[in-house]
Image: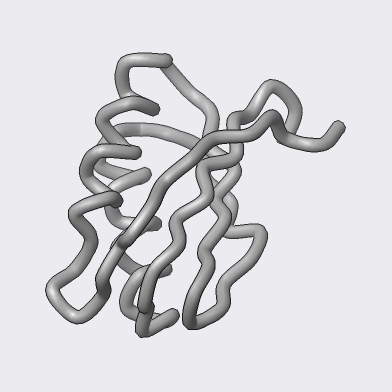
Length: 80
């Protein structure tokens, strides 16, 4: 996804639950999001859209669904 930011969430995840949560939040914020990596301890999401809404997306996902625990969040540039 060109021009996207990859947000990396590390922690303890029920993968299906967190991916559903990510997709729902992206739709609500009218962002384009693609889950690039999804394991029980790391989820990477390429997201693009208005910068303030990308920030809101990061904050919402850092709280996560009740059955997941986000321990850390960081950003990296998406590969071209």
